Length: 352
Image: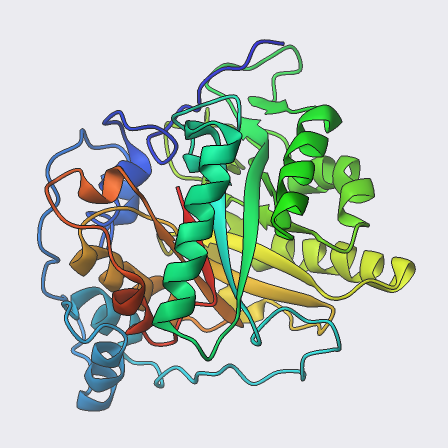
């Protein structure tokens, strides 16, 4: 089956809908998903109930150089978030919080879906080496664990033979990228975009990979189209019930195969992408990362992190950096030092 490029701009450099507008969606994400792209604007002031001074202070701490509107809105009427999140102590072999993961994301069949496929393998791995060094220098107290994050189930703009709007890549591709990861003693993450399928249908075919100690999982609510809409037309969603089902499956594999705990990365850049986040369970066998993966200028990325990650604590946090799209409107890509100024400090860093 020929490879087809991804339908939305979080994986391409072309202007389109949805996440290309990162953070025009801060206060009205569903509306932004259907608007034609325009240059990003400064966040609007919050409307409705005002945040208390305590809440504004908590929001401001998440991004000392950015705006506060989205975070203040997210926190209005709620107690200040508690970080670190209370929960079970890490089991032996846990990656987080003792190490910081720095990952290259994408698919080798496409230069537009991420840096993993943008360069020849050796050059890509050398670039990853340089990022690992940069993060080690920025925070010498936290060892860096390199990773490759492969989109193995890719949402599609056409239905395919089964009408599911997703393409499953073969074990041969996963095996190849797994070999690349081993060259750097890196982890491998398998990322799933279900389209009109479900995570319950897609995850079982990856279990033999997830039974390996160095293979972990990413799930992307953006392309979980529960209402039957074609991927790329709007932003999809997962509920805590979906995430908890995945946690249960990973926990079972950890117990069954006597594995170290798994890391589960959940993408997020709007509030509706992940519903009932406060109901996500904490199982010491599965370490959950809520990963802010929208693109845009630093001030808007920090605002989004504050509103959708900091303001709704789950367990650990992640932050995506885009080599191309973060610079699209003339702004710089954030440095490790700038990302480490966030509250909490992200422990999963992904480059696209």
